[in-house]
Length: 590
Image (tube, rainbow, N blue to C red; front, side):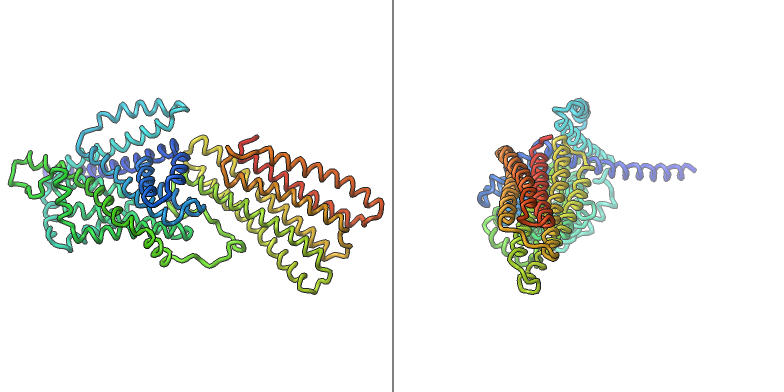
């Protein structure tokens, strides 16, 4: 009976420790995510401007990637921003590759934070930080600092709990675990490859290199896992995290997949060359930290052995940093060659972007954070806006063809029908773009966002609605022109054509101003120019409306022709109103 109770107690304790281990890892991952998102909310727009301005060459790009990633504690966030800039034409792929190299260095700061958490009992400082954080969260001005403190506190609490759980488990005294690791020949190259593969698989499964790094630190610090196998796990983590991003980028656009492949090439190449100098390199790093590689359990006092093992978390962090710095130093000189390689491997899809509906900047499959998703949506709306001006240009061309083609069976008539079909297709594209962007923004708005970002999303939803209305107005004009062309009505008289072209010139000017705003910064945009053009359009419409009645009364053209003529003029005026609505939404007016 007593023996059964002992077994039951042992099983209960094992289950409790197992869930404590899982819970502490969950705290660690949640803390990392919260801290990263809070930092991005505090400095997201500024970081994007830094990325765009400080990547003039591969070296400044590398430094920028390192600083931005160290600031936001997320290499994924930096990669997403970088890919967005490549898509927008603000960065070349070569510059993006150098930024991603820098991001690999910046992300090693996480390992240093974790090694400090593993080496010292910092849980006592966590609770005051939680208290200060909750006060700041309820103050609108400082709530992001509160979010950051909460994230950092969860991270440190997770590390402290993980450290305590590792001690509680007595991993260094667990004979079964020691025998398992001892079954691998520490001098064998195959052993290194096995742990390398294991680290990659674990990282891919848990989707967090930070969690696997924490487990590795626990195992090494307790003396259960030898340093060489531990570092092989760390190397595997570097590859595992790039496999995740490459799979996530499969449904993304060409540049996103190329950037993800460049990231994988960077890490895989680094692992390959480090395998040739594996032990000397690790021994060098151990020497820097002051860890005695030759010290074995049983040859010295237990306290001395444990003190030496406690340095292993710093060895892992130092190796992680040294490896990425050395790898960057080697590959930074070959950025153009890496660019050629990834472009050769991943070729763009041969589609006509004008005729096929496709979102260019929103990469739904690529990992990102909500704050950065808004930037991608802005670029997509800019593309939408430019597409609508091209559609209006087709309508103008259609009007010219309708005037020059008198025989509905000649070549120009064929051109007219092709162009009308193309405009029809554009109208369908505008409907799809509105729905897809709205759906994307809706999914982004479900996340915890800053008030500024929420306001941006509301404005963007209004923008896409008005842009779709511009597409409808263009299609209505095309249908009016087609109805007249295929009907029995007479042609417009010369002055009607002149008036329509002049009205369309004004409308095109307003679209140009709108696209200037969508592609630039609103601080430097003169909104009065848009309002002045709108007033001109309204006044000109009123003038033509009055003149049209007089011309019909004077029998210069029929009532039916005058009606179609005014339909085009009124549709241009409506389109001008939609443009003003887009500009007001972007400028934050009303």
